Amino acid sequence: MFNEIDNKKTLLDNKRPFNKVAIDNLKKYFDVELTYNSNAIEGNTLTITETKVILEEGLTIGRGKSLREHLEVINHKEAIDYIEDIVNKNIDISERVVRDLHHIILKSIDNKNAGEYRKVNVLISGSQHRPVEHFLVQEKMNELVNWYKDNKDKLHPIELAAKFHFKYVYIHPFIDGNGRTARLLMNLILMRSGYPITVIRTEERDEYMKTLEKASVDGNIDDFVKVVANAVNRSLDTYLYIAG
Image (cartoon, rainbow, N blue to C red):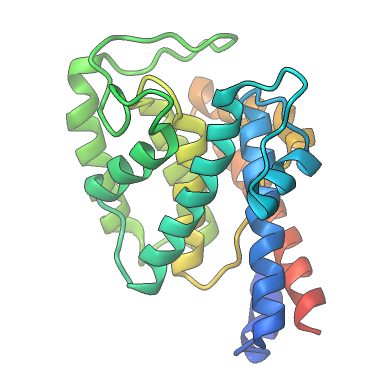
């Protein structure tokens, strides 16, 4: 599948630079798509239409929707802008970037823990995986960043992004917001290699979670890499359609 994806990426690269209308269209589309789907995977009940209204019109949604859900939308959009800025400035992944990204995601929701590694042990509902003990988080995150640096020029960008995502959630470094942060870091890695923003859709949640769980239990990450590759392939199709 990597060959098919790389052929599409070459086609897309040959169409660059895109005109401003196309860029603005893609930006608005993926801001909503990524924000809605990433939040929905974590249980946010706002619809894609409500997400769009909040992001593009600055309106609040009534009918029992919580302030937290609104903040999750606003913060996630800001987090997308942050990783796009990181890419444009050619800044690579570091622990500082990870913590700053997480801080954006949780600010005004849980200021105490925003950007701060957890200081307690945690369990994940519905999973056999038990994240590392809290006193190992700093060490494991340092190892993860070093693993990334050692492998970023060796692995295909999609495999690199998927494995980084898995290794990150395996550590589960923060009390909350790990899933959203993982998917944004996955996108940061892909975008640094010239791939478009990639969305794991909420209807793919079961497969996404099952393949992550499988990788945690038996170490086989192949199925999870396929989930990410399929999502990248879909995003390339969208970009090619808009690019004409």
